[in-house]
Figure 1: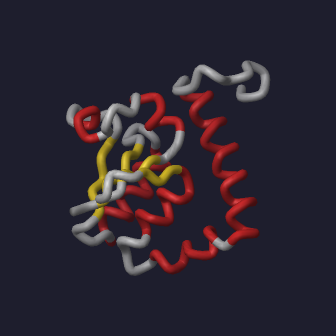
Figure 2: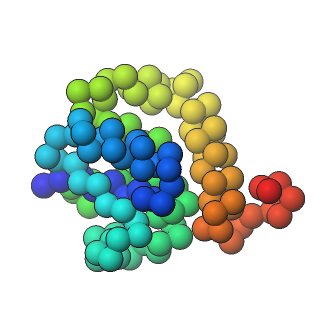
Length: 123
């Protein structure tokens, strides 16, 4: 079985990272563009906006990882996964997750994927 990483193929930063992942990943990781036709079938009921608001990885056992947990899990399918391990160390995890979530929220608001934006804060 494989893990499935859902990504925004219309985001240049995301597309660049996915190109790197595609180059180095093993066969146990599948990359799915959220804008593709078959995404809804695979996403297990998650809305497109939910998938676009934060990175999601569906594990082979059916559980989900989001945010930096999804990123680290995906990169573990490459020879370079060990480089991201420090992002999950307790003190670094707290700071890294906070920074990632803030960035993801701003991105979702700027691109119109979130209904919870405060207009002045995210423009």
